[in-house]
Image (cartoon, rainbow, N blue to C red):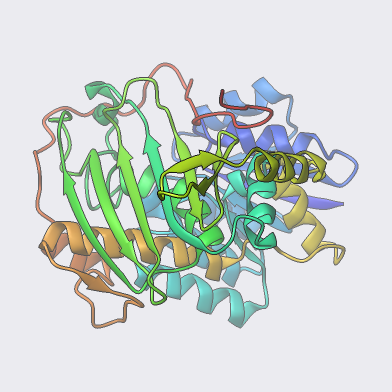
Length: 389
């Protein structure tokens, strides 16, 4: 029986608790910690947990016996909580983004290695049937070599979104929509297409005046073999129509699932290739679904790795790749220069101090609240079983 603790009991903690409760024969939540202990107590009551409540996670680490901790605090607290938990001999499942700087990522990786503990970064969209099938289609080569990849990570948030005290600051949130919303799509993109050698980005704040950070970015990614990628992150797109698209030599595939294949006529203009489209559709449909989706799938995998039954699919190094790409986007967008990858410790945005010294404030925060009354949130488009017409 794996004993579990949770640090941070805000809205995203619901997803972790519900996932753990799917596996009651394998795990039990024994402790909750939050700087607002009344929130932790309310969460325990809501989910019927017999769990000890702590205002200080350090006290929880010292006094409670458990194996695995889910860390669900805001980004500025990720590194300290993860390093402390790893040094205390606990396995860690850490919410996105991994940290607010690459320096913090490297501190966590070092702690995991030193203590021989598992460190996994939440990337729950890799545990959806649609995305898993898309990855397998790309790896099969049926669409030919990938020429161009595109991410539209479109979200909408009202101006009040940034009233929460830690949001909208470079120090506490680490960035805006690129870091905290598009991070999942960026993770999927680098998982499927790999890391580029160069990025060039534009970042700005179009509509959120109670925020230092960006609410829009768009980036061109150049690969060593000539492929190109585009990533756009936004908090100003009504409808939140998110997609990930790959153009191959023979066909295009995307999620929400759609396939289009063209062949040239005698004059070079396109005509559809229904035979290839049918072949790709059949291959997609015949791939098996995942056993568990989203956070549930990732938590199943993390516990399976602890039990020695599964390979950990998303470790700290995978999480660091995604953050490295986010940091490169910021460095390019905020300096106006192309940025080459991989980044090194000499890059100005490698540390949080470097970010704070180099990142401009689009606006200054003038309103701040400790908590919202509701913890209702949206997590983006549900791709399961969704086909675009």
